[in-house]
Image 1 (cartoon, rainbow, N blue to C red):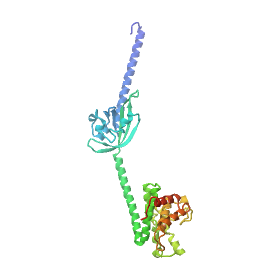
Image 2: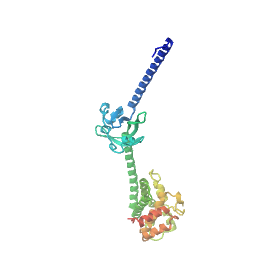
Image 3: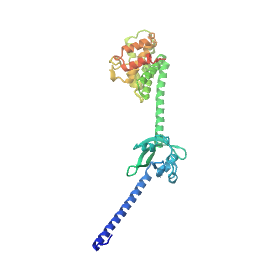
Image 4: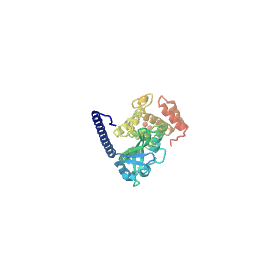
Length: 355
Ligand SMILES: [Fe+2]
Ligand SMILES: [Fe+2]
């Protein structure tokens, strides 16, 4: 190769070769540092990570994965992924390897994985493809985030919330029992109104939680009547104006009793507004249409239907037909038209019964 070269040219050639060797050594050193750094990151990650080839063989695991699965690095290598860390999606079309082979670029899901000691560990699994520089799929990388602590906290919170709800329900029940002791008639009325309100709210597509709030408000909506002398409540015949005025403050009394309790539903407000009417002719504030809570608009219809269809101390029952006629006549004027339609449908098509 050096035949015919002058001494000068030979020196230059040698110098160039030295430079090339130096550059190669340098690049090898950098690669080694990069590799060590990547390996350090891989081993330090707080999630379990494994690399699997296309035939489901485990080719690499990090330390966190060995802790999660219970299998050491040596025990994991070359084994099938579904043998050492199985989950509900193994051998199904939902398996990340199957999905990524069909061109999905990223798979993420929550699943309980089975450990070596057969206990289960809830994980969020994230899987991505591992590709050669030419794009050929070599396998996948799977990341397992252990969410058992998070699940524990969620369960504790759920239990506390359930206890809180039960306590709230207990308060409502205690109030309704108190009313029943003094005024059995109102207690029966409230029970039936609660049943109808719940059915209306359900058919209107309200959430389970909101239906529960409406049912509770309805179950004690006339609580303020404990302020009305029993003689007025049970007296047959027409009431005088002053007597009516006393009865008409029962929504305010109920509100005052409940306003200090931090319910997770607008119970006190619903009770305060249950005699309001869409055209502003109701009491105590004469609120109009949308200014009245939807909960109170449902309660208003259920209240009128129950009150008219059943017996009162001062008059016999008008019957359900009269009650439905009343809400039909007042639809849009006094009562929310959507609520009226749902209520009519309940009685006429679904054969709903108050008792
Ligand atoms: Fe009332
Ligand atoms: Fe009522």
